[in-house]
Image 1 (cartoon, rainbow, N blue to C red):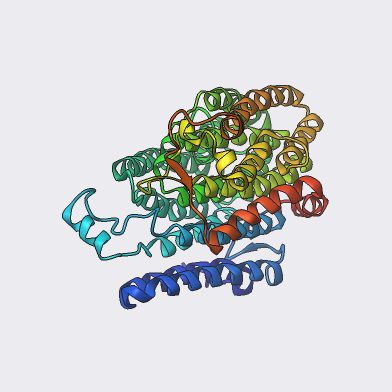
Image 2 (image 1 turned 135 degrees about the vertical axis):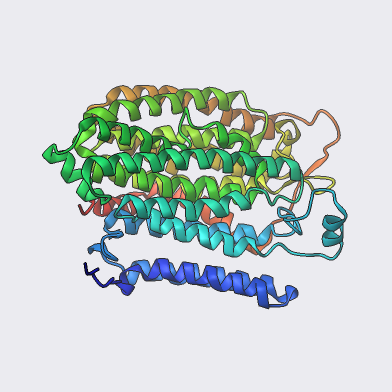
Length: 508
């Protein structure tokens, strides 16, 4: 038996190789570079490699079909999503660099409150390990959205998830809450990965191949036992819906988003959502179109539950980070509407929605991390945000913009995004989801308006104990980019809509 020699199209996959190479170099920097010089080295390496990878996506990569012996598929959606992940990665890296002293513990391995942690804080240690961990996660996401077979998809899932489990437990304040969030995310993520892996096994038993296109062909020709395929789809859906944070697999979202360092929360809310939905679209549009009558009702139910349940829970929140977390679950429901539409318009509108929501989420969480108490802790209690609109009008105005975008108010990217997925749903014959989506938007809008009213129309019940820290140029640039994209895609979205439409075709 002779095995074929592996072939690697380096020019096509170089965006992924650049990011993984930078992650490896970042690990070496942690091992061999003196601590005082690590921060600048890691920041320069991370931003430089992300920019280089983005340029490679634009210049070198082309929709060329299978690569690396079918493990990677380079088509319009994968390249569009890779570009979106890299753009979000650049903005998130800027936020991480800006908040390195406030958001991250000086020594993540130290027991909270221990002598080792106090000594690390007194010595002024800076947590620079977050940079290679973030790069590893981004690299996994780039592979995840372009995976051509289920085994590659599973490996990429673990590669981008494991660093996130660690990053969630590195908050400098409220360390126990942060470590609890990391443990919950790890345990639930492990269970979800197990379901995903069992689903892969079932689909392999049905089709005799792990290739997404091969599974789609086997389903079309009707070979194998249909029960194996249906069980495999059900198990696979559990793993994917967990990653997108859809109801009923959403229980981790609020706790993890609240406990994780705010820059990591911003990164997760945007980049993880893009990567997870990229995989959802690829699996259901490439491998499972022949079973649309079976999975469409399931995803429709998940969309309804995500929109309604999360919208109601959003209204009840008194913590701003948890409010934004449940908003993320609601938006997962809207994104599932585009997936359920199962047409070209649904695919392109979902791609547009992902990049629009990604920048809004990064900007919103980036601003939320600027509200601090007198002791320097982050303050997310809504009661302590009262009056911020008068004391810090610019902060309140920009944060209000992000909230209005999440509510879907016209002239923001959120309105165009919802309108696009609703139009695709009507064309796809699932208009009932549009009705539920509109009702959910109205319910969730109350929660967003509640925050705006608290900032502008309520006086603090006691002397103000919170303040908004002045961001440095990195955080200011990241938030400004988020706000500019939110407004730009609301006023002049045509260019990105056309780009998403051109990219909205999978190569099978």
